[in-house]
Image (cartoon, rainbow, N blue to C red; front, side, top):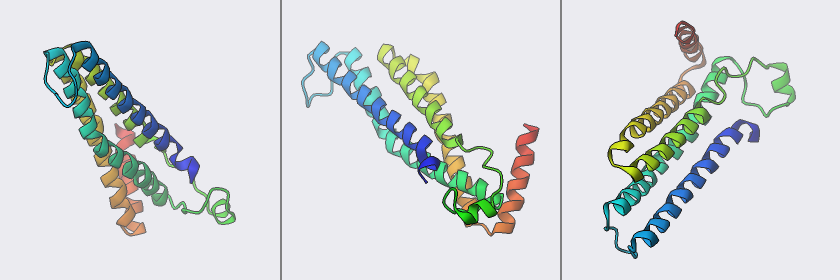
Length: 179
């Protein structure tokens, strides 16, 4: 179990550290521009840093939820579509009925890393000027929507009967080979 969620846990911890970095930047800006709490307005330079941190914080729960749902269910759905059981790694039943591992074991974690990098670039861009936040904002939105799609696909595969799940997975793999 730990091996299967280690990538998700790593991305989660990186996300928490990134949120801490954003908070520290706001504290630093408060000191530099002499904006004492609870005041949230001040020079435009402070307000951009503050808004960037607040915006990143607002999306963080959505990111975490989609990261974990996609990471668990998309990966599980692909394995289940291949006939692999959900037995613990190395169990006698799994060794006897093992199939190849999921072709995308870290898809959600990779999307999560892309999202976090885009949010860092968003924060840095917004701190410089409102216009410089846009390209990273769009990149992070695409990564977040991809996580939503992976999560939805994984949940759909989880609830479908095994025969239908296998047929859909086969079509999905053919589609990916053409791409």
